[in-house]
Length: 141
Length: 199
Image (cartoon, rainbow over all chains, first blue to last red; front, side):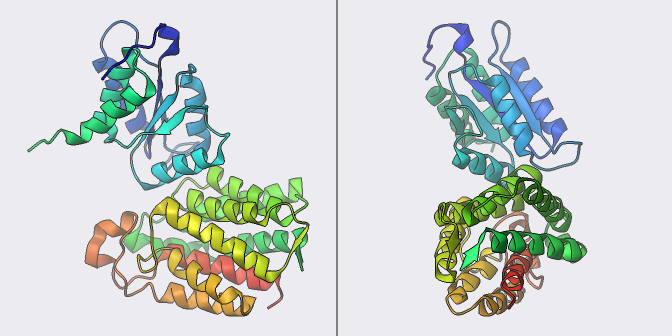
């Protein structure tokens, strides 16, 4: 699944978009923590709206994507409705997000952990996306 | 023919109408949504009006593209990307013509509505803004006033529907009996279009 692409500087970036700043930040912290020691892929939370409050901010998403872009692509994971729609709308704009940015269809927490762990191995964007999406197949009952 | 001034009037009239109706939109969004539709759209269309005043784009397409961009970046809820996509795709379909006729606008708006349906995955009857916009576009070939009436009737007709999209869909049958706030704000947008046309 993981296919190392070479230098550490070319890791896939991960953006976590939640309606809540606290949720996005906590999930980012959790995923980085579970990725273990060594080099960790760049992760940026984009939670809530500017100035606080629940919602989705296109500005925060664009800034987070720019911050984690190392030229190897950016995987964006989202929680609910407007987070999904805002990322899709930004992708449709064409120039709002770094080249190689992809909205990943995955559960937010489990997908974030899988994405960060996989990206930290140097895997490419397709492998990161597959690992995150695969988190849907983990049944709890 | 409709020029950039007409489209600025449309957006300004929408902003004024959303300002007037913000509390009603939020009240409609309380029982079935998260009670922020009015304030979110108000923030978005205030930004639209301010930006259009400052930048004064010269073509109909450019007015709608800029307005849509403002909505995507300032609204904070699902209505931002949905209305933003509606206006941007409509503007893009208008191209860089200095003036468009009513039929050209109707065709472009249909492209925009199709893009919204694709983005949100909603179809007519799902209790969303689509239920006001589709009949409005269908009636636009007749007149702006007919489009306004069709949008208002479409919004009223969402009341008995069960929501199948967005937060309201989690409520299942409890969403029945409430007019959809998104269809209501879409009716305001179309009413402002008729107002800009003097109808």
